[in-house]
Length: 380
Image (cartoon, rainbow, N blue to C red; front, side):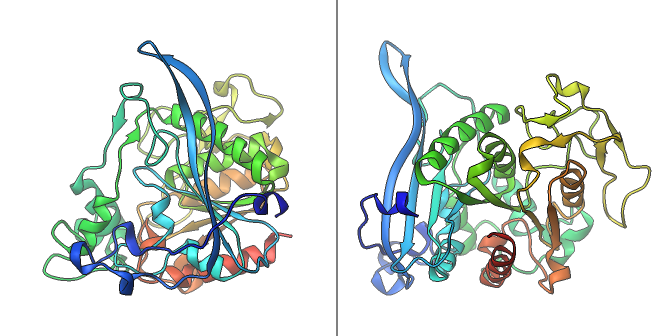
């Protein structure tokens, strides 16, 4: 923790929602979330000078925000890595103005770091340097907020936890949905480039702050594995909330989408791999259960992920999420590769109705409390 306390801190107020339920003239100090944050820092890491349009500029830098309680009681900080279309705001507060996971963990003695991926949010992109992608309202409703209406996968009907109300809850026009959608930003379209940018910047962050636990969500699941591969001594555990997957390809794909198993970029295997096509894979002959996909896994004998052999991993899946049919494949791949991975289906923990954005849903702090227990038991 010594490296963190060498930074300059000030008093912090956590504002509800950079999209909380109240807006405009309705938003004032009475809507602020009470917080245990006593010190904070804001800084950038990574980046390199490049020449563009006759100018010398910087690209690839990453914005980092650090929060700390007055008394730090946890040995390692948590670094929160957001998913596609999102920023560090995901962890600060819910779109209806309740406390988010960042405050929860500060309340319980952790230092937390919140990042905006390079070329995303407060981490500036060079104009015209990258093709960007955006998230259409209909896609967001179907995958995240109102999946129970669309029922595009078998478990979707069980979704009950998205906040909000009114005549069209969880869809366009509902104030909570609209405040959530306001916070969605463009993302770099090239998955491999995003992963390389984040790995480079995250290595710079860990080199600056020291050992930490990574808490990843969705697209950022890719980054957890590749960052731990690059800095195994500095990644003490990974909590992967519905990480990108499943391995290699799912039951409907005919090409390798994730060439290296769970990443787009190279990671270290034993025996060594120089060409990811040399990783022999096969599909299960039968799925592990009803409404689950048949996993693609390595053929035996499986290669091991060299630098993750002692890294505790928790993969967490919501009962109603579009990840529910396949996250078990990611956990199985990790275990096959020698990684000490645990998979939680939240319904098996007595927590029901969650979709992909569980950190923003009505029972978000109940889930955070369970994650805290796992960290206490598994991170020494």
